Length: 409
Image (cartoon, rainbow, N blue to C red; front, side, top):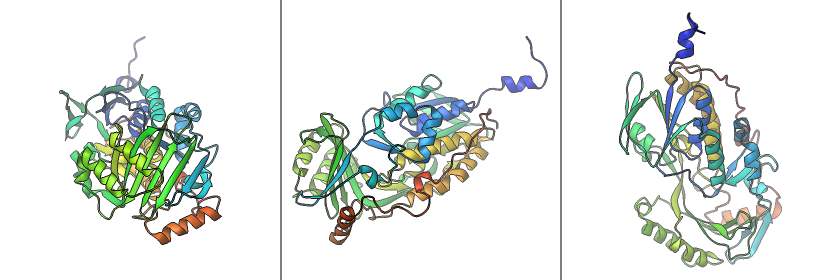
């Protein structure tokens, strides 16, 4: 049957195109929602495959509703990490308190989720891989905005033009640097550095977290299950970010080793493992705070736009919620108008979560003897961390119901 009349052009209109840089959490989540709003989506990722492994991450509050609407909640519930206790130790290795991990994290048992990062990225990739083009082992080289699109060249060669380009490429975003300028303009240092890696589980730990503290230093071992490996975490206070040391792997190892020189408990064994770890990640604890998340047809989502730091436990949740809000805001609107609507609808939620922590203010990582004793007293006397007043920050946004219509403009 041949169709004629005004409706023909609507039905045959070329779909809008989107390029997303980054295939961790925000990128595939945004690709999922954009593809359902009528976009043809390409995701470019510098790694050669979806990234496996990684430290467990939290999915809380509003973000749980996002993954439910994506249809992956049952899979993530099956992958939920069942941590049963969080034990705090003093500088001599003696027990201070042993409490429920939910009491520390402020999460709701039976609702909020904690999953291995790789399990989440696998679920996101499986949900979107048949509808979206993925370019692995590649990245954006240049961006050039015009009135009707963004011309992109890739490091592997070639170029394309897209209606919208989104940086979902993490705290150290290349997209943000290309369009908005150096990271230093937007990063707020929170006074700590950290290292994460894995090592053999020779500690007899199972489904639990054990953390040792002295003022300004924390060392934790996290046994996600009955695995033969545990996640190691080392966190230490430092007045200024050690930018030079972070550029070289050997300097990173020396930085962490010197910060924990003379430490007790299992820290010497952890430092030995750190010296040999092939999955070591060292970075500063910081947030990304930007006055705007878009410029023309280029926008940022997740940590690239508003990393809240792991101290809030909300980085993954903000990425999932931000992706949902961006895609829904673009539906039925022009690109620039849609990106502005995304920011209007999401910024207050982001700010509420970022504002949970200030420099040197992490409850779990006191920097003075007095603050450490106050925290230990609280842990001994309370079954839960003091609740925030009003609606929890992780649930401060009620997801709108966006209509799945074809994008315009």
